[in-house]
Every structure is written in C-alpha cells, then in structure tokens.
Image (cartoon, rainbow, N blue to C red; front, side, top):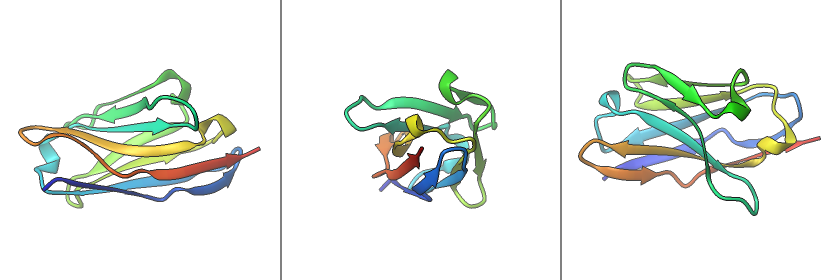
Length: 116
C-alpha cells in the first residue's frame, strides 16, 4: 500500500521559512518523480513543483526562487523548503506521486499559514 505523509506545516510570519517533509512507503521511491501541490481556502488545488528521480526540479512561477524541492532516497522522503513566505502561500500542502505501477497517490496534507 502506497503511503505519503506530510509534516512540517504550521504558522509563520511573512518573510519566514518552513520546511515540509513527505515520508513515503509502499513503492520504489528512488525511481519515481514526486510532486508538491497546494490548495488555498476557496481555491482549486494547484501544482507547486516537481522533482524527478534524477533530481531535476521545476516550479510554478509564483514560487520560483523562494521554494526548493529536494529528496533523500535513503530515507524515502521528499522535502519542500519554503523561504520568503507570503500570506498568499497560505494553503494545505500535499505530496503527490504518480507512482510507476502503483497509480496516483496523495498524502493527507499539512497546513501552512502565513500571517502578515
């Protein structure tokens, strides 16, 4: 069974930083790309960024230069480092894997609240 579990959310002031983690199990982490999405109150879920199995990354324009995705294959964990946070970054952040042979999978999310 594929499991994705996000952690690290919380309340932070604008300009601050948070690091989210997504611990995984039930699939071969090292060969899969991983994605981060977010859903702000009253809005649709949106793509934040992606890291390939080889470590290449891409991001939505609104977070470029502020957010960094990394992965630790030994720990089956993907990270989202968020710097220079803004109130508009307030959202529930989700980890996603469209896992090879295991389907599309989501974590339950972790709430990030950025106060102005």
